Length: 298
Image 1 (cartoon, one colour):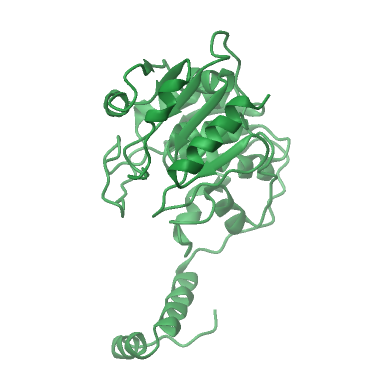
Image 2 (cartoon, rainbow, N blue to C red):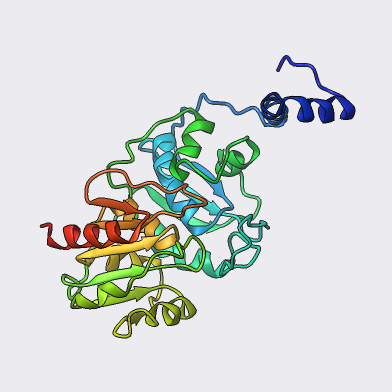
């Protein structure tokens, strides 16, 4: 890339005199350091992908996986143990690790249920055709936008995110249930779920500590502990309405395109609702109206 690199002193002066020009210079520096990607991806046979990210990131990567692989068989390799530092300093269930063995085991039944995904295993230096982690080496502002589109920018592809990209069986008994998932991260402190107590059946999917916290607002809230993420997806696919914040269960709801309501994170809005049956909110009164509208919609 043709641009003049500045000395340390020149960078300091530029930062002081023209902050916008300094930001542009930083962008050029990051692009200069980013790897070159072969965009001529025409596969004739199985395609091997690697991903090291959180479970939700993997779900949001699937539209790109399908677009790249086309109708070829897909082999997913999930790389455990990669470290991360979260800018919001909020609690994450895996601490500073993006993916671990247990999460892979929970994901495998769901991913193997999907058409064309022939295998899903922990990465152990297998030969890879497409490294989905490459988006992390490009200067994307990852606190906003749309998680699923980051891969489009890197690999020069497109997919219709308004259509379902995940499948799951349906389970009887959830037809009149509101399913809730709300992680400690990405919460809006001004939102109160207490009004949901007027609805007949409420179930929580998530960690025990998340459930205990939500039960303070909703004493009648029930907790469902799932065996794996295929069971979680089946429950979400079977309920009358799903409500979640920007955590893993919402990625499933979004991918299934069930009737869903998203609590948008005011400081990190990088999850979007696209397509039918989707609603999102930032404020209390609007939240209550949206739930009433969605509940009464056939």
